[in-house]
Length: 433
Ligand SMILES: *[C@@H]1O[C@H](CO)[C@@H](O)[C@H](O)[C@H]1NC(C)=O
Ligand SMILES: *[C@@H]1O[C@H](CO)[C@@H](O)[C@H](O)[C@H]1NC(C)=O
Ligand SMILES: *[C@@H]1O[C@H](CO)[C@@H](O)[C@H](O)[C@H]1NC(C)=O
Ligand SMILES: *[C@@H]1O[C@H](CO)[C@@H](O)[C@H](O)[C@H]1NC(C)=O
Image 1 (cartoon, protein in one colour):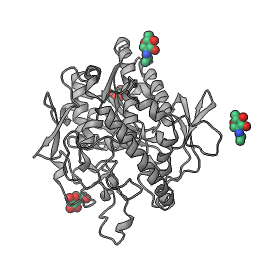
Image 2 (image 1 turned 45 degrees about the horizontal axis):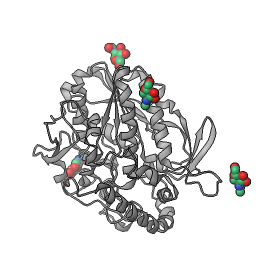
Image 3 (image 1 turned 135 degrees about the vertical axis):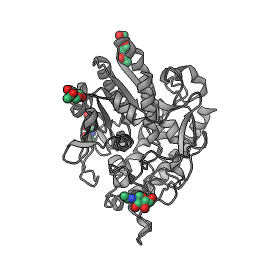
Image 4 (image 1 turned 180 degrees about the vertical axis):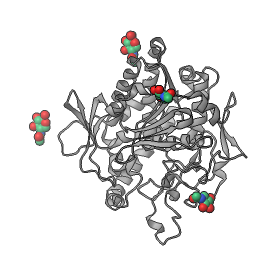
């Protein structure tokens, strides 16, 4: 059943792509000039249709593929991703009259595009929910206890703009107890480190959207002048060079792999993803993502790391009635029940690779004394179409006369908002050991 449904969806998706391909090209230029926050993830709208040229779709999503773990028939395999005590990632969003632990007033670290309260989002119901695993309670993040546990320790969140979104949530929750002091930032404020002086605790966010060595040719507005040059067999030194300084690491990646790219291995061109006119073999981004994760995970397994390492799975977007480049919006005001929304094909592909590679690696992790865990937020985040800024990535977007030009953000998350629960989960996993 599940597989049949996926097939059908694939077809719908395919036709959608063909329809939007035309639109994408038409609107791409004007959209680029708007200077989107989306530049961080989807700066080239014409990348997405390129997926349809790749033969990998059949390979990765075929019913024969043993890697697919979405179906109920794979119950046993799913166990590997669960906390020993309880499957933290299966459950429901339930009402939480207490509301968020911080607000736009109490936390000063919320970046404008995620600050839905300040930006004038009128509805507030989305703030009054908490994640409830089916078989256990998930206690709310206890900032005081967390900071005590983390005395003299260091965390890093490594990835793309969703990791940045996540780190703000963590810092805001902790700011109830002590305000974080920014002690380092790179030129563009993409990588940063904060310190909690009373606890000698530090939190870093490391900008590494591919986790691998990449040359990205984009200006400040996300306009690409050339394909990404991505070395599938070399890891990004922006995190490998500091790896052993951190006690806890949360990795994530994926979305940037859909960008047009030329792939290298041993410094030789291996192929590309969407490179018309280049006389290179389009090997598709799925192979590239798989190879990079293999390398990252094998680095982790070889590393002798004594702390705790998490891989956060891909997160869904919730554009409805269009894509981000064609007027899509996310106007829902409440969570949905399981089964109402389906992960789009792109995220299915990313997730399948993540689960598959994590499973392979975790078989070896315990033998090597590496504490490697999956922070599997995909499904629970899928149930929160109400949690995105939408038009409220801008300050009072409807105060001006330019309604038709507002591009919604249905990918990043409002703060406070649903991803605060990711930290409840992290804390529980830290306590579970
Ligand atoms: C916080 O949001 C409220 C609306 O929810 C707004 O009235 C207030 O001015 C905001 N505060 C700040 C500091 O932006
Ligand atoms: C603060 O923590 C770091 C590790 O994160 C440690 O190397 C350093 O010695 C600590 N400083 C003090 C004063 O304890
Ligand atoms: C494309 O590459 C192949 C093999 O590398 C080569 O034989 C062929 O001449 C190339 N075609 C063009 C148009 O450059
Ligand atoms: C796990 O260990 C086995 C035996 O040492 C090795 O053959 C295999 O490649 C390892 N798998 C991963 C994913 O590292």
